[in-house]
Length: 60
Image 1 (cartoon, helix red, strand yellow):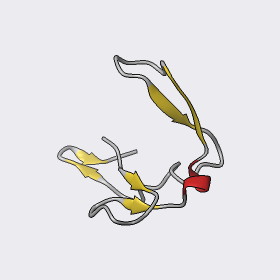
Image 2 (spheres, rainbow, N blue to C red):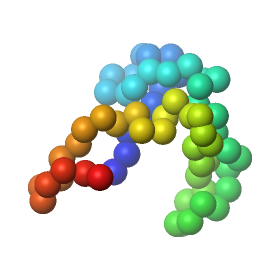
Image 3 (cartoon, rainbow, N blue to C red):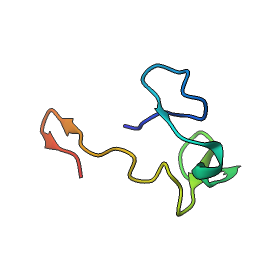
């Protein structure tokens, strides 16, 4: 489960941030079938979700 971020705020349902705030690592194998870009502290996307709930209770 994740959150989508946008650098220009034109995508409904996305959280808008500036591209300089994302601090992304290189596209690489971070585990799983698809290459991804890891979030490197202090990325604005780390802890961007404040609260969420699954059917079985709150997320941690």
